[in-house]
Image (cartoon, rainbow, N blue to C red; front, side):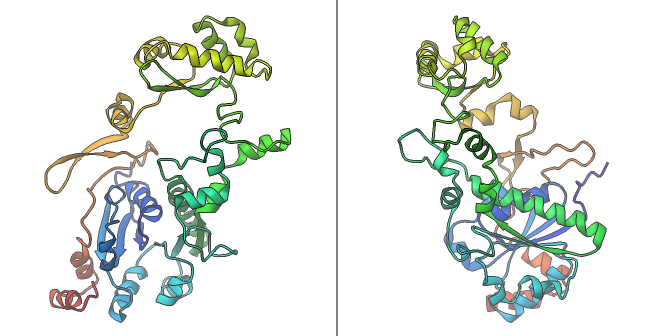
Length: 382
């Protein structure tokens, strides 16, 4: 067993900020890669140093707009396997750290750029955030209630799934290809592309029905009683996901209406079934329904809030909620590693570093002495 993770020996230089890129490099760090996150100290004023995605990383500050800063960067990237950046298209060219410049000194580099709309196309220069990428991709149009405004989800789907996760997939694919070819390559990740790729089911149903999928009124989004959310007597909610008839049939038996089993997708009875389920679920509390449904072969789930998730025994058992000690000695809960490998498991080895915490150590590793490091600090290079 490789105890340090599947990516032990891989060095990642991450110059991205905020959520998409740092989420990707967290995944790589969780699985053993050495991740050095690099940011300009000028960005500290933004207050957007996002601590939860910086575990298993080192962090240094560096000003690439200085010649000395650029020289430090090229020393770093010369020994790296992966370089990540999340600037607007063209910014790395202005800084002189674009793919062509980097691969001249490191031909095996895997160079990953994460942007909102990609390096090509008519939207490449637009600014944006998660809600905008969801909008252009068509995803946001499908979230929310019928005849009401689209609802922006409370988690950053485009940043994490479209950006961070797709970047991790791309980097792993490129590393595997390098094992066979010896060559690195460039990866162009568009968060909007990633969101469009989440639309196969709406596209499939549009093709077979000829109808546009409507918000809150689709096969897998509230149109049928068998796949919806319901309020309980205490104002909580649960979800029902009984797509297959055997699960729906069992739910109907539990609810005392076995005759509804054959009417699961009957359009003429659709409203009747929904009204019945809404009325019936409101007769008991969420805890009461939990007792009834937990032992049954029914696709259901409690709609939990974050504090409940953090206390759920499932996630403790699955090590998806962990407790670590910070540098101040205080215990804190963190989210675990979802990809479980039996031979090369990921691990949380170090808590998130402070901004620039490892700058001195990394510079010493590159051959700079303490006097030079002090000089860099005085000049605003680090």
